[in-house]
Amino acid sequence: MKLQNMIFMLINKMKQLQKIGIILVLVVGIAAGCGKNTETQITEQLELGNKYLAEMDYEAAIVAFDKVIALAPKRMDGYMGSSKAYFAQKKYAEAADILDKALQNVGTKAIVQTNMESVIEMYNSIAENYLAESDLENALKYYAQIEQLTPDSEEIKKKIDELSKLNQNKDNLFEMASSIVQESTYDFKDTEILSEDFLNAVKDLENAVFFVKDGNYIGVYPGGYIYYGSMTDGMRAGNGYWYYGNERNIMIAHGNWENDKPNGQFALERITNSEKIDREPGKIYGLKNSIDGTVVNGVFDGPASITWIMEEGCNHEWNVIYNEGRLQSESADGKDAAYCTKCGANLLVGEHIEKVQGV
Image (cartoon, rainbow, N blue to C red):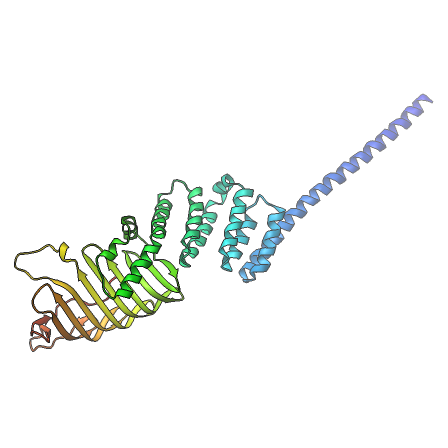
């Protein structure tokens, strides 16, 4: 009887253990199923997001990528996809906000180890587009984000330094441009408006930087050339001034722009600072020479008038014809382009191509 009871109890115990085992298997199975389901959802939403991105359905792409972020906040895929979708819509602030959120949730260290190149490329695209829209403050903000991720980069440090100096001189640039346009005379004091830091910064400038004020644009170009006037679709168009100046020389050109080049009627003046001339005894120097004529893509072509203002003696005036920048001869020997209308002085043909510099 005792043996029978023991067998009965053992059988019951085994049944209980069997039930526990079944429950454990179910729990593990459910857990495994849930994990698989989450991963499947992430994959599906990523595929959807990339599909919508390729189809330029950016709002739908953002919805899909946001679901990925909610399911896997420590993964970069969703953040990058969403940022690209905002960027494609020119919503640069939102695109940057998503990247900032990724830095917080994923962690800067993790991003540096796995996704740094993609994140830097995105921040750089955002900064460059702000720069193209003349928004230096926001451009500098996102270049600073790149600097945080790459603190040893001399290139980004130089970029930030140059743009900061340009931004600090923004008001001075408009003051100088306004002075030149309103006075219709150009003085070497105008160049003093700009700081030494600015002049040093523009020497190594790689791309043009633009500012907008009261509907007028100022563009600072590589080499220190400055444009002041109207623009269309990011290109110089309509009436505009083109300026370059230092303590020794000023060049200023004014006229019609088309396709980002001087095209049409144009006046070009070059002014020399008499106090900075390296003089030779007995030589008379010109203080200003000007050309008024037609230009094609920045090169003088067709009839034009040339004027030289001298320190003393006759101020020369010539009526000439240019052919693709070259003076055409008026003399039988082919050497003289024209004779001064005041004193008869000859103007030699030469090999020089006359054009608006720096465009």
